[in-house]
Image 1: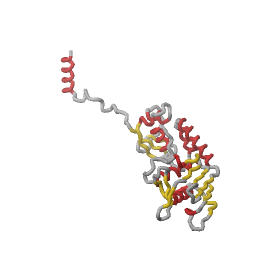
Image 2: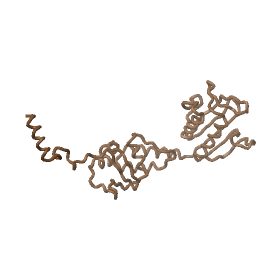
Image 3: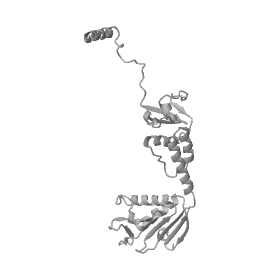
Image 4: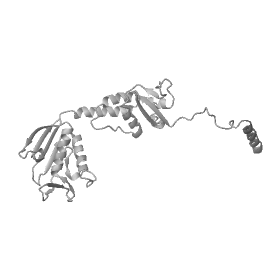
Length: 257
């Protein structure tokens, strides 16, 4: 029986060599999809768009929606906000809503997510918008330097996000001497204080951990805090003992945002 089948295949091949080959008209769906969203082109994997079954993107990726228009290049066209779509695509890729500092369009992002049928993303964006509204309340920042080892430098801020930024910046300026922000400097969620330091031969005060690990100079710490405050929208209200002509040497600085 097998001999007869082989003989038939041989005869068919001599008649038409293409008859036993896969049909050239049978196209395998592409692994990637190119979308034109409001004039912005995005290329992603088909499986990324299919993360949430029943969503608008899953339906167009699987061909369930037949009325999606094409742009002149033949790409699927979606008449929505193009720049915001990058955050939607990143959410599909990572499962998290990762936004840049200072992002102020969570409300718009939530509406876009609802259009695409991504309710989890819409709810997260709405929560972020509510938190941003709460943080929009007046924030107070105080930097006090007693110039004494018993008190050291204290940073208080009613905006907890700013305290987190200061912590992250201190880790950066430590130049890999810290793996993370030392808990020994944390007084509360909105207060950090540096008590342990020594003076160098040049007179600079060196901030140390309890195990004598050098972190940075106290002047650097104050300067970085002040610069971050100004970049974050804080305005200097008062400064005490600025006779030395520099805010870095003031005993107390008060900011408001």
